[in-house]
Image 1: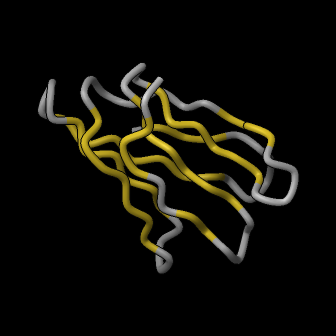
Image 2 (image 1 turned 30 degrees about the horizontal axis):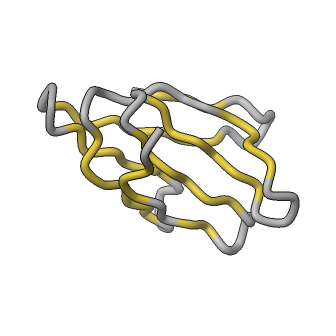
Length: 81
């Protein structure tokens, strides 16, 4: 697993790392524990966070897709689109 991009959300203390293994590692900054691993497309190039919407994006160059991930407020579930 080689990280490609890692935007962080300081307000919620999360770090998002997109990796070559088609996963995004969501890490709790305070505990340094991986708390979720939502799937992303093949060959992620970079990741970005939009604070206005709370969405995290992974651009995936190998398969030409964009993965959009959002944490739901009601639970610790992560939605990937």
